[in-house]
Length: 296
Image (cartoon, rainbow, N blue to C red; front, side, top):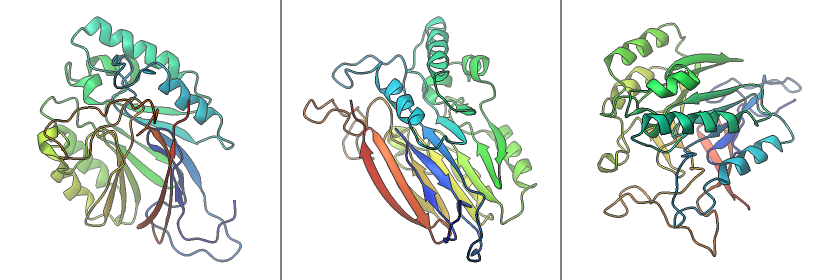
């Protein structure tokens, strides 16, 4: 694909977005006729498989398959799909927790995508420190490289106190020590790393330590879930972008006393769940975002 822009980023997926990346947060101007090593991935978040609440989502068993159908219908296959947590809805019963994880894994197998990656949300992992999640999906934190981008998956949910923890922070420091300062880095977390609404559990207690470690790097973008809505935040030069949920939206941060799901509106079904398209230029610092609704 031939491009005449320095950086191009496009999101187009249910509940979080698909990323069409040309260097993401960095890259030098290209000569006319040259091409980028572009790629595109899909982020899905907060599917809460096992949730039952007709007043919140009477189609609780349907929105996840609808998302997969949308991904499978994309004219260009994504390089990979990333689930940013809360794959399943919380349960105190460890047998039921594993049942939901198994059902979710079976449904995911219907995705027509070569590579699918996972990370837990607190609904998946906080009651057993991620034990069941690991049985089904492997490590809760890890890194991978795709083309010229370094991806870091951070676990800020297995600790019920909403911490990354000293051991994982040391692991992060060791990984970052291997990266050049101009590396293109994408971080996936479930909770926001910054204090968005601590009273609502929309924060990571030691998230500022991770942000401090990332700050020396010029090109960092963070994608997260948890808050069930689109939100954009800059911490210095680091951009943080939250994903919508596939199950139900939540109110704006701190907009009401309690953090309660937005009720289903028969006149506007699937309100708050949708597609997102984002085009970013100028080294990934400017974003043009378009939201598209989920349809029955």
